Image (cartoon, rainbow, N blue to C red; front, side, top):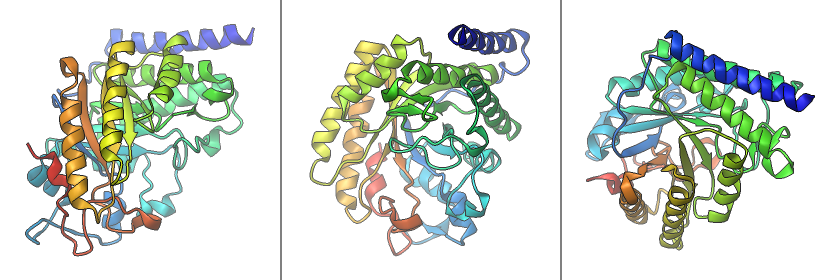
Length: 351
């Protein structure tokens, strides 16, 4: 009985998306053409850093808007921005973004001609392979209510963006969902693979109800781990999940980055061949004080992802290059040095 109810709910949500598209209520809003290959940066910390008085210099020591530096000096054509459900906004200066704050940042990027990727953390704080905690307000929901909440929140975020003049080119349905999302209900390794698939479907259909051309993404960590991707993406597809692309994170060390790139590219080829999905690398990073190695890493993975068969590799995003050394408790994979000027790392994106 419960299974039939859930299936009925999933069909109702899908039908709602199709009706919206048919009636023209919101679906005609479509994303502008995304770049053939995204050279991107996650900029989610920008607003919080600016609230703390942070400024940025270009390589010549001239203070400028960080987004303009990224675009003009390093050919960054796309940005990635995360959205939490109901974050503690007293921590805004440490980078917590709700839908409104994220939309303001997205509009800044869009006004500079940059494409936008949203990362929906279905949580009030960080969602990653080690934690996929339900938002506080959703803690006591049954699974039907949880799907409804995912639908409502996703539509709300998309419409908040739309009201700021932004139609995202890509939306991640979750962040690094290597073991599913919204635990325990959607924890894939503990019997929740079907629930995980239905949650992905719900997010996908909600995005499409607002913008039919926005591409939806399932994003996993450990891009070098082909077995993980086969288990997760294969499991989603076997359980009927609908989404457009697969994204990966890759955080190698200075000693193994070449091996990890080779493994990630092999994994990407496998995803394309086995699942017929485009691939995008939505997070990479290396230590800020190893800038020459980071430049080589970026250039190498960029070239190899762009060279995937039939242009199925869609881009590479660096995670938070604007972060100063040691930011937010010790993040050291930014691309600006202690002198306030960029390192050579992002030169790997040039040409």
